[in-house]
Image 1: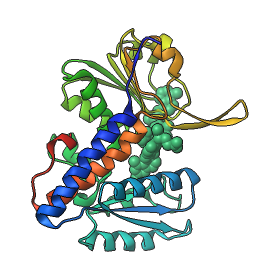
Image 2: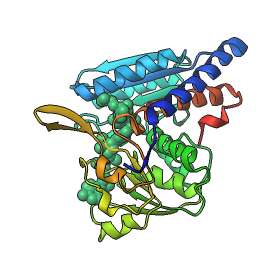
Image 3: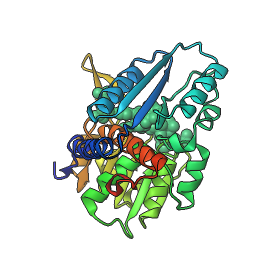
Length: 296
Ligand SMILES: NC(=O)C1=CN([C@@H]2O[C@H](COP(=O)(O)OP(=O)(O)OC[C@H]3O[C@@H](n4cnc5c(N)ncnc54)[C@H](OP(=O)(O)O)[C@@H]3O)[C@@H](O)[C@H]2O)C=CC1
Ligand SMILES: Nc1nc(=O)c2c([nH]1)NC[C@@H]1CN(c3ccc(C(=O)N[C@@H](CCC(=O)O)C(=O)O)cc3)C=[N+]21
């Protein structure tokens, strides 16, 4: 392995400490406690683990955590009713509805019902539009976490060629917007892209969010490039369940200059950024200065 391993777990810990410090200050100076509501519909085991982790880390940072677990058969109207109550609740500064939602619920309708000021996922169309036009937005947690890791590793990203593999609304597209804002030359590739190999080889930075286990191998990577692996895939290997990314770590680490592992890379940063966004949303709601190190 020649690449530097980018330790997302350690960096996320420093972000959480930063959040906790600001939260303690908010309480002592203003008597305010930021609150995050997480809504889970149905019983996906992986989602339950994430939601539990989010709740635990929220409380560890000194914030209030409100968990709403709803039956898989919950109707769209009932879920909209809950969102209305959370929008109106002054102790809730951030609302996250865990995706994916059951098929009988229209995700966009739910996401757009969340008060944009409480939209800590940054998925509401207003926040998408604000980000795309360079205005102050709530920024999606996973891309924000990737950006923090990249800035920490590179300093300035100015002029670098960045390739984003994947064009989802939750990772690929907002990631591309953030890189563009940091003056990268951005290419977005997807399942219809031709000659992916040469696109990837042009990249100084490659962000992989396709949801296919170990699809990107070292032979495609430009020597010295930075590789950010967003993928979370649970696979069976040697009779055991294993968590792997969208990047084949061992071969990629022989080519790349720096690389994030899975687990321990982007995943922990996503949760840390969710906490940071909740703090930011609370500061904005109260008209207080927001911690600049925790926003994009
Ligand atoms: N670490 C974290 O915090 C998070 C991790 N994830 C993980 O990131 C991965 C991506 O998630 P998400 O963005 O939601 O996934 P989606 O399934 O919504 O999007 C996948 C994207 O990858 C593209 N794609 C699929 N196959 C290929 C291929 N063979 N070659 C090129 N492009 C391809 C798709 O193209 P097309 O549009 O043409 O279909 C699509 O744009 C998943 O593994 C997910 O679990 C997601 C969120 C947070
Ligand atoms: N509204 C919404 N917002 C999200 O941000 C959101 C979502 N829905 N649905 C699902 C995806 C996925 N996601 C992850 C968060 C943390 C880890 C994480 O902490 N991963 C650990 C490993 C955890 C494990 O062992 O399972 C790691 O990579 O080290 C992974 C994935 C957020 N998502």
